[in-house]
Length: 120
Image 1: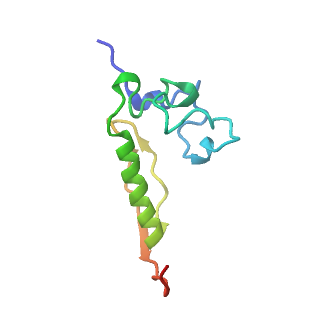
Image 2 (image 1 turned 120 degrees about the horizontal axis):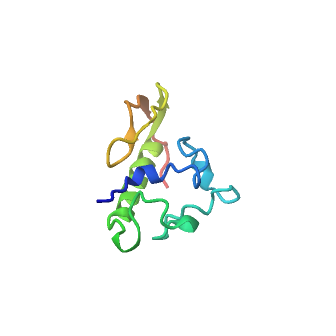
């Protein structure tokens, strides 16, 4: 029996520079890793088969795009309606489960933004 731990494949230093650092800007055009991930592609960009967060090939996660849509919608509303500030450092990732999450709580204070006095 051969098993593959998908989150661990995203940490291979041969393909991912400084993989454990939170750097969303690494995928911005002009950056060295800009072409390694493509959210619109089944193959995930140039490193097809190396980023397995949502599977790949014929066994690609059917809910991937819906998941992206949900997360995008939730964050859009939160950022639109609230001022937020982290009160604790970001905990390291916990790779001991099927879905990678934080190893501890992420504490945030939030305050509802004032509604604009005009309507569009």
